[in-house]
Length: 329
Image (cartoon, rainbow, N blue to C red; front, side, top):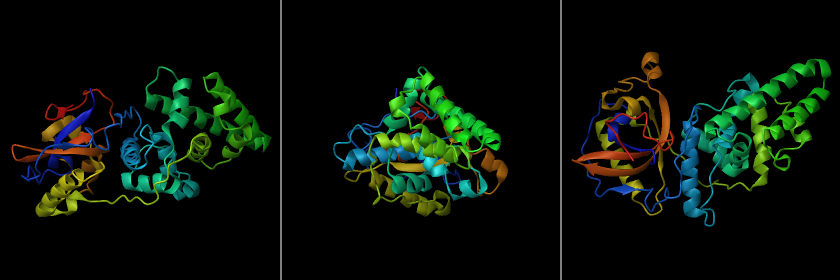
């Protein structure tokens, strides 16, 4: 079963506007003959990388639609996450030490537009050979742990050994990864890893390490594309109604693309009884209970004069964890 959740339109962000009738016409979904037809359902597992999975799926839909000959392309969420999180703040303040948590448009601009899409096979294919039997997100987390451990050990050793610690740390890391099942020819060289180990944080190191892996396949550049934010809670009832109609019009255009959406993920589990953030997004208690999440809208329909969205999530193909208020395809 594909994990696709059909949500009543407004429960997603703020339920003070509820169940507004709109005239959107016939049902329409992009995973049936549209740009999402060949995009598999993702599973973020135990990693908070929903933003990367939403951006990856939207990127792949665009590439499959307009970059002919690349219908089998899948963008690496791991590389996308490191390129988004490794920012100026990381270099200056040594923060953002992992790839969890992010904004879809900011991620798209910093990773896909700036660097181009890196093929999933460059990293995830390697991980599959190294950590056989583990779900995708657990393989990513395992590699991050291995890289972080070696990064910390190397920097600790460098206080006594100086420059030789980086060469030694690189050798030890590569031996560990090869023993785990990696192919030596697919990994960066010892000199490349040693140079990457000189990074300020483990995230910067991971970014450089994965960047070397991405050299094995060409990146697809999407420099002329845009990602535009639309904020539901600033629109009011009439503005919201127009936004829903605009979404319907967008999804029915020729070569239509999915719409990435950020929302309170707890609505998926709690159903219609979930009340979102209320009238403010500044209340820390309400914000904490939101369960910030990102997915992609890939379809729309009208049922009993109520507009419904078809939401492509990144929780795998199971329907486990969703409220019975929502249909799961």
